[in-house]
Amino acid sequence: MSPHGELSALVERTGIGSQLAGALLLVDDEPLNLRVLRDLLEDRWRVHEATSGEAALEVADRERLDVVVADQRMPGMTGVDLLEEIGRRRPDVAGIVLTGYADMQALEAAINRARAFRFLRKPWEPSDILQAVEQASAMVQHRRTIERLVSLLAQRSEELRASLEELRTQQQMLLHLERLGTIGRLSSGVAHDLANVVTGLRAVEWEMAQASVSPELRRMVGLGLTHVDNLLRTLQTFRDFSRAGTLELKLVELDPAALVGDALAISRMDPLFRMRKVESAVAEALPRMRADRQKLTQVLVNLIRNALQATPEGGNVRIAARALSPAEVELSVEDDGPGVAPEVRERLFQPFASGKGEQGLGLGLYMARLVVDSHRGRIAAPGGAAGRGARFEVVLPVAGPAR
Image 1 (cartoon, one colour):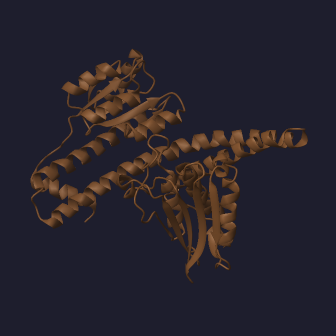
Image 2 (tube, helix red, strand yellow):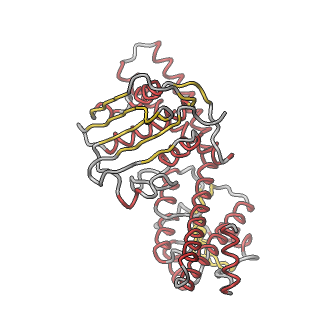
């Protein structure tokens, strides 16, 4: 039986019924926006309104809610700030953020701090709002049902407890996939804009090559282009995965030493590279692989960048490649940083599990896992207590994935 089927059967046996209040809260400092949203939603939900974050918290304290729809740009408390506070007071309520800006910082905060269910850009379509509220309500119902079942059935057999834990995992994965889908949709627009930026910068780079421009300025422009190119490739990877659920690989015959060389060449343009002692140890005569050179280079560059950022100035970063067996090659990146915190290690390769606080979306290692999995390989961060550095290992089959 599927996880959803198990949940339905348990609900029927226990007779706990719907866990939804049928109520939502709209928050916007523009009364006209509130009126438009109310007219759209009040036929199906009991609607509460607030024109500020402070007023919204008062409503949330006295009313039982399912969903909060908040505008991001409000005087005083932003939509993300509001949802973060509601999340502390009422963790069972889902939040939706509306913004008229392509604000990636707000998106990062909505994911990392407020744990928002959905992030919608204006101008929105009525169908987008209706779908978002319906899906958020379904997620709240799913989560509250699981919590209610856990409280009622905690004394049942170990088999039943294992089933509930599996349901909880499935619910969390649904939320992860929803957030990843949001990133994929936003990535399409951002990637298009970035591609235009790259075109302009390439023209500037060519003009500089024809003129008497200092080598340092040319180096800085080249470094900027490298970072923008890497960001563009990351966005394109998530866009492709969100559309198809898989990654398309362009397989070529590949020497692992060449792969390491590509990653080091790109990483060498990072200013942090010159402030660390970077060592490379590539075994001779490694077996060749069939692999996607660009995507695996992207994985190594991300791992090296993480290591450079984690390592103090003057510290060591080590990149190595060796044959684990006639059938497998291991690529590794080690650093002298603080290591991986125990509370992060178990979810390190899950989406939005960032070890950098609010300084990133927590998608780099998840992207690396998607690429490595697509090659039928494995990625891990084994051993080492916190404070003794981190080691990441990518193991790839020599034969590569099926064509």
